[in-house]
Amino acid sequence: MADKPARGLADVVAASTALSDIDGQVGRLSYRGYDINELAGNASFEEIAYLLQRGAAPDDADLAAYEAELAAGRELGALAVADLAGIARRQPPMAALRSLVSLASADDPDSGSNEAAANQRKAARLTAQQPVLIAAYHAARTGRELAPPDPGLDTAANFLLQLSGSKPDPRAAEILDTCLVLHADHTMNASTFAARVCAATLADMHSAVVAAIGTLSGPLHGGANEQVMLGLEAIRKSGGNPLDAVSAQVTARLARGEKIMGFGHRVYKTEDPRAAHLRRMSAELAQGSGDDTYYRMSRRMEEVVFAEKGLYPNVDFYAATVYHYLGIPTDLFTPVFSASRMAGWTAHVIEQHADNRLIRPDSEYIGVSGRAWVPLGVR
Image (cartoon, rainbow, N blue to C red; front, top):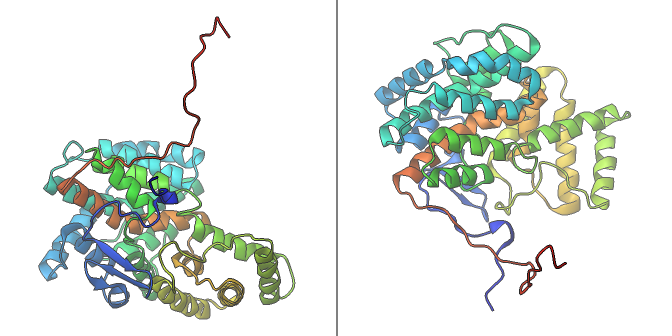
């Protein structure tokens, strides 16, 4: 009798990739062989997007040309602009982004080609446009004009500028830039796998990215950072000392067998290396904010969950308070994740198209066998 298939394809190798790698036993993540601990705070998001999409670290000329490509690519297409207000009124953020990215394909000059050069150009445009789409959606739903991008600012700083309407603090922009680096790729996660399955049919890049966005919208994948923040807010509003409330409520929830969002990981058996960077940035932003309550609550929650269950925080846990202190609305946390992961998704589509084979796994049938069909007139 054949072995039972792994539930959720756990530990099944679904594809070969040169983009990122994880050693879950020691808590190591690398992009194209570069350790994330060396990249975070030392490499810009633009450098990492170039590295992932084009295969090597850029030199000064490469980076300047790529940044110019991103700057030109921030202009939204006519269809997306025309439908933006209606979409903002009718759809929540991730559904809106799914619609807007699909609309963007109609105005992309390379939409009909999967050739390598065309895919590189589309990857840069999608990476440039995703933060603009998020900010434009927020501007539309709040009834204000979208601030124009500043050609002198990078992706992270321009996003904060367009989201708030005012030029961001340089350190805040640096912290968001590091967040974008930390989230840029993460091997065969659910949304990346969805993108590759779509791309493997030789569907175009925009279609594959729409599949990825739809997958990321699920609460078991991309929605955890938002749920972490909502949970912290609910505990704080419950009254009393917020640290004592964290201890009591988290202990009670764990005793009932409930899941605490932001903890544990399918791959990492120790601390997620990205969480360590996010914890430090959360502490820095909290100190500068004048109200470090949410950071202190997060630290207490981390202590309780580890004491009770031995679980470490994952990338979503401290990302929540970092985004909060940066002034990003809670329901835009997952969209910001998508802006970062766009670098990885598009790189995976490029990689899939370059050496393609249709992804078609088998399944285990668990239904009834050997039934005889009785026609309607005889039943």
